[in-house]
Image 1 (cartoon, rainbow, N blue to C red):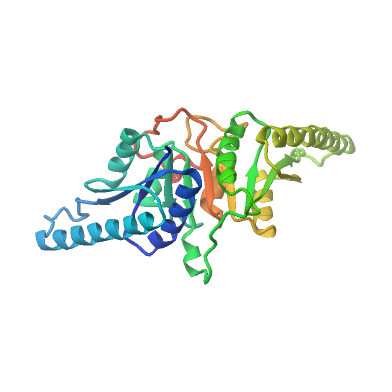
Image 2: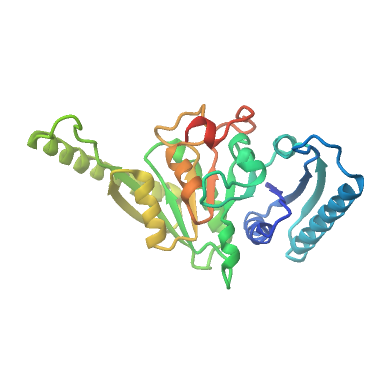
Length: 310
């Protein structure tokens, strides 16, 4: 059975995230670990008021019980955990101890507005993560299925680590009209900047694009065969892969984006590659980030999008 770590923040965003937790847990036949961490330190270093602390503790226990009851009614197994201390440290350690397969976080498209503890858990856990967008709280009729799924592939083997997750999600959705789109972006080569490009330069760029398009078309067909599910393909082209993919997500109204944490050019010393980072910071749809690094490998403390320049 897969293990899902679902940190509760104690905000309205929990309601949206709970809907996703229910959906994913049922699709994957997974157990959900509901964890609420009460931060014990104060910014002004003054002692915590014991009465105030007991009130917060009671609220946290009620939240855990309420969400657990929702999961139980939906037939999803769960475990409730209330911890006290540093949220990120507790959650990273808990994920490791429990062998979590997936972390569910809430994060908006605004820089730095990511999940628990300013998003540090996202950058440090090195685990596959479902990032839910809080603006969906405004939806009058929340979606109940991932009916349109974009799977971005860059031609690398490591990017194809997403395929087993797509297979698991869609196998349980069989017969419910799930539309999978495998997309690849052919990036246009950069022409000389310091001098006007010559006709020879432009011709070389065109030939490179044509060659890459031919190879990419064959690659997408091979990826579809390896996926083993009915899927459409999109061969896209542009100056920047992340921008082209973001535009496609909006234009085709995708419900879920699936990306590998790193692609062809991603460096394993950083938690995410450029395309993944772009979607984390600016995407507006639920994002499944499949971690290609070995399970249990965590980034150093303090690694976030702000201090590594993503």
